[in-house]
Amino acid sequence: MENAHRRWFGEKRGRLAVKAFHNKGWIAYYAESLEEAKKILFETCLPKGVSVGLGGSETLAAMDILPVLRSGEYRLYDRYNCADHFEVCRESLLADYFITGANALTMEGVMVNIDCSGSRTAAMAYGPRNIIAAAGVNKLTDTLDEAIARVHRIAPMNCKRNGHKTPCAETGVCTDCNIPDRMCNHLLITLNAKKFAGKYTLIIINDEIGF
Ligand code: SF4
Image (tube, rainbow, N blue to C red; front, side, top):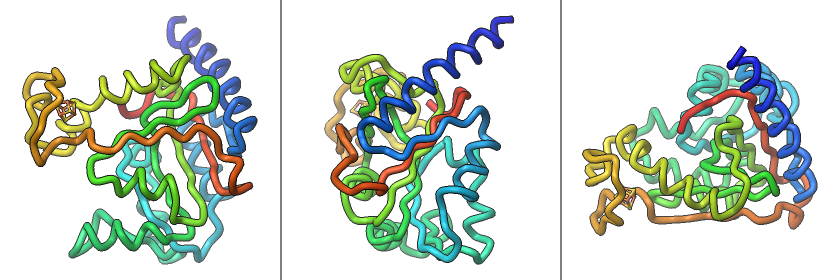
């Protein structure tokens, strides 16, 4: 019963958020599951033959999109299988499509992301011709303040996941560290997506994915 109610709540909030993002200029989809999100991505959003850059994302990993992107039907800038990660991330900035997760989405249609190197926030702000983001309903917040708080709250988990040698990766507590391995370097707030019609796509998934 509890899961059924959570699923019901996720759908209500997910569909409301889709409307809010649509109102802010995003092409926005609601997906009931990871499988449905993957289908929307490959059958509706991503044309065959295009070049694709990727942002690091637990959501994309859960969608298991890499095998499809590596199938030869796309020109993938493969940040997970390359000799020079920095160069591949630079090249990804001019990809036809940049696919990524998102750290927080407000119910008013604002997206917030925090980044270490800036490769993902840079791509989301400008460069690739198209952006496609996917995120679970666990990323939804009611206000922008909550969204910003959320990206800082989850940062220790991202540090742990990515092997950053930060105090928070040991203790789970942010000390506003001042070291090279610091992850919280670039904060991007995407307030509106109407500048380039059709550039920004979001898939909101009724599932708890990533952090
Ligand atoms: S500022 Fe440093 S300590 Fe705080 S969450 Fe980010 S990486 Fe961790």
